[in-house]
Image (cartoon, rainbow, N blue to C red; front, side, top):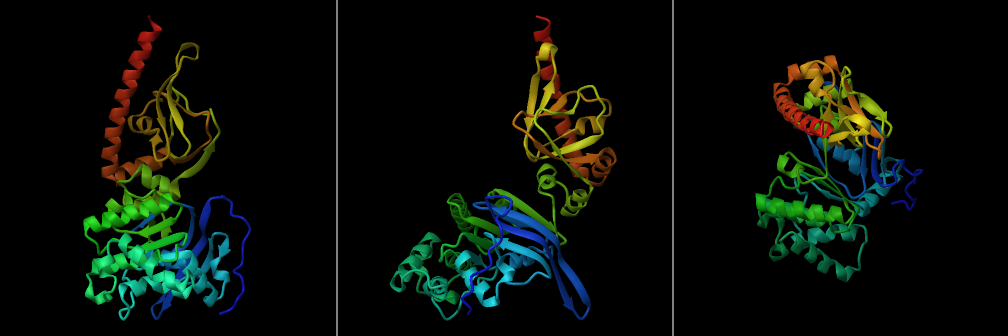
Length: 383
């Protein structure tokens, strides 16, 4: 093993970013030809985030994790973890770096069958020479207690259930107190109670500053994470679209990601003017907007404030006519928007009946809210 220090890159653009994947492409070759699994992935994860990655089987989830952990090499692109380009290291350097910086929970456990659960948990400490030799058993036992396995500590993996093996693998991933925990289906072999306990543990670790990246098929697990990333056919779905229009299929989300226009609007600027035509559907990526009924002598009524993952413009595009209210950026702005043309919005309503039905219900609710606010405002004007 060489003693070279891993290369350090210039500071990343975002101070709290701990993981950056830039233009990651992964192509596999076999006798049948080439197959591209990842198609130019750009992804930034912040320190202390609890992130779930979802997608259908074969979408590229596990391959994405392998790029992140340095287990496999990208065909092209760069992976930067805590300002270190992990693919600029040698294999031996990367292996040692991985032991100190990543805790990995594999989908199929990867416990050594000839070692007890306690010894399996101690193994990463031995490999990276972390903690005093006589401290390691006590720390390993504390981690097994954390996942409810203290009574099975001295058993071999095959002597316990698959769920207990998974819990032991999670304890092992925590053994070096690495800043990043990467888990591939960590609750897939656990009952609901044990799974809930593990997610509670992950949530607590994230609150303490550890970054958790979890692949899962379980929708109930994604509701517990701070961020959900969807991968579809080797491409990432725009997260704003996924939040705003969750009833779309992943394929349609991916297709819509290519149709939207990204806009940045400064504070206090009006995006939609009341009684003017509307030709765009807007989804909010960041920042906030106010939906406003403008009154006499600047006596405005703010009907609602909309934030990330919410949308506006759907009433006018669906019902026709001019805008029933103004929409402007809050003074705290700016706001980042995704804009969809009228034609593409109509296409979306046609190809996704579920989204169209949900949109109809939202429109009815918003129209009633607007009528109520308008009646209250008129009463104030004529008092």
